[in-house]
Length: 154
Image 1 (tube, helix red, strand yellow):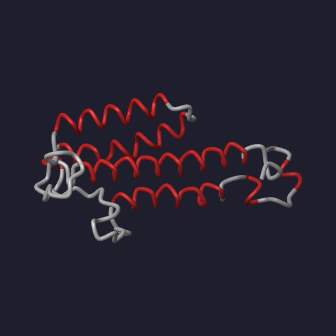
Image 2 (spheres, helix red, strand yellow):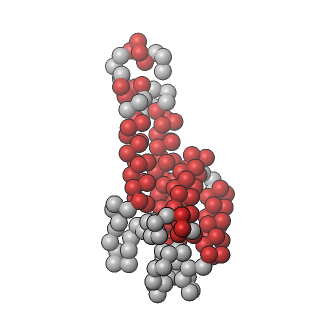
């Protein structure tokens, strides 16, 4: 991959960081949903892992702890940005249901183990994952691998 052009190594590293960051954020949100199903929405709390179900202070502490652990991790800045970007886009509706239509959309797997393939949480990952091959097409070595005069500029 490094033979295509001098940008391909950075591209591969950024692509890997974006995939890892989005997956870590999704797993953090799924765990939060199992702790307190549906967040501040009126979801049944009988299967909640957190005693008593949803608690706003507990949700804020979880969010602060998640952010702290991500920032303290020995990851690249790109992975941290993707993790916090995906996480922050869903946590607001978890804590404040008035910010959306009243349903929390970050459910990846329900209690019958059905995957929500078309839900917004996986859709945000799809956007990241689809952007990677599209960005690869913008690499100079991808578009013009055999044109030697063109490659001298990259």
